[in-house]
Image (cartoon, rainbow, N blue to C red; front, side, top):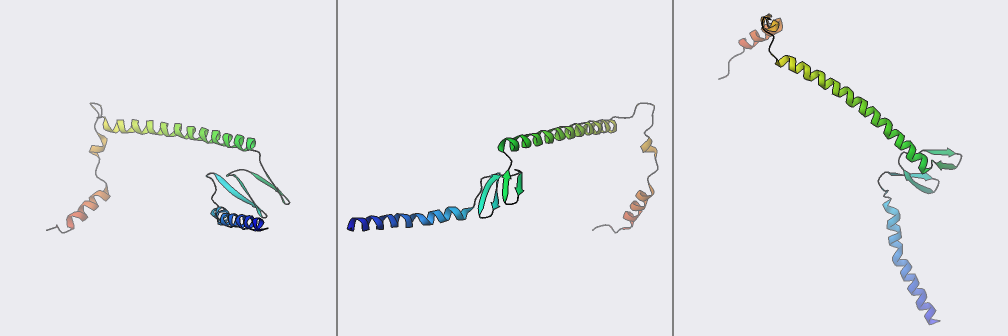
Length: 139
């Protein structure tokens, strides 16, 4: 009888030592990256983010992993096509800008006057210049 009591106390001690560790695991609530928690009543389901769920009454059905992976892959393909199209647009815009800069940098052909050099300054520019002339000069 004495041996049973000692074994019972030893077993109770081991169980009591493990209880705080079990409580800590439940309190952390950390999810792996890319996962989300779905609460269903008292149960919690850990599923990948973006997975589709279908709820019928009290039943929640998750799409299968094959469906999820296929849908995600198709979404990425679509995004890649959009990004490639945008890249082509930006490349064309960049080429046009380079051509415009090249035109600005190159001197006008001989025999043609620089039209912008012969233009009168705009009225706003002369008004601004006159206003600046009236300001007192710094010491």
